[in-house]
Image (tube, rainbow, N blue to C red):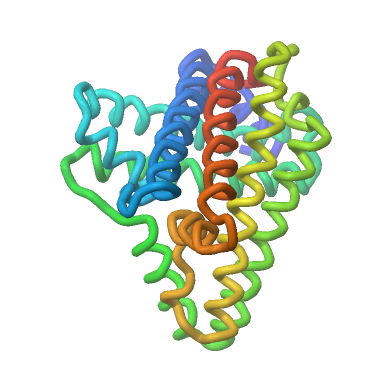
Length: 263
C-alpha cells in the first residue's frame, strides 16, 4: 500500500459516520469537563477545599454523581474517536493541511488519547491524579541526561500554546474550525474561553520552568497547581474567578463546537 492509498483510507475513515459523530461526542464531553473544572476552580477561589481543579478532579466528580458511570463511558468513546479523527486528519492532510497543521493534529490526538485513558480509569472504578502524573513525569524526565533542559523546553512549549490560545481567542480564529457561524453567544463564549484557558496554561508552563530552574519536580503541578498558584497572587480569588468563568465559557463554546465543527 503506497502513501496515496494510506491517505485515501485515512480520509474515508475520518469521514465515516461513526468517527464523525464520535468526534462530536468528544467535543461535547470536553465541554462538560471544562464546566466541571470551572465549578471546582470557583470552589478553590472562595473556600478552603474544592477538590482537584483539573481533568482528574472533573472525572472524579462525574464518577460520584448519579448517572456518572454512563457519562464516563460515553466520554471514553468520544475521546477515543476524537483522537482517531485527529489521526486521520494528520495522515490524510485533509482541508489542505500543511506540515504544521498535521503536527497540531498529532498533538491533539495525544491529548485526547490521554483523556480517553484517564476517563477509562475512572469508568472502571479506579482513580488517578493528573497532578501526580505530571510530577512523576517531570521527575522521570529530570533523571535523564539534559532532563532539566527538556523540562524547561516543555514549559516554553506550554507557554507557546497558551499564547496561541490567547491569539486564537482574541482574533476569533476558532471560527475557522467550524463549518458555519454558531451564533453570537457562542462567539463571545469562545473568545472569552480561549483567552482564559490561555492564561491558565501560561501559569502551568511557568511552573514547568520553575521546576527546571530549581530542579524540583514537585513544582510542576499541572492545571490544578497552576490555578491554586493563581489564587495566591494579589487579588487571587478574583483572578481565579475570572479564569474559572472563562473555562466555563470555553465549555459552553465546546457544546457549540460539537454541533458546528468541521469534522
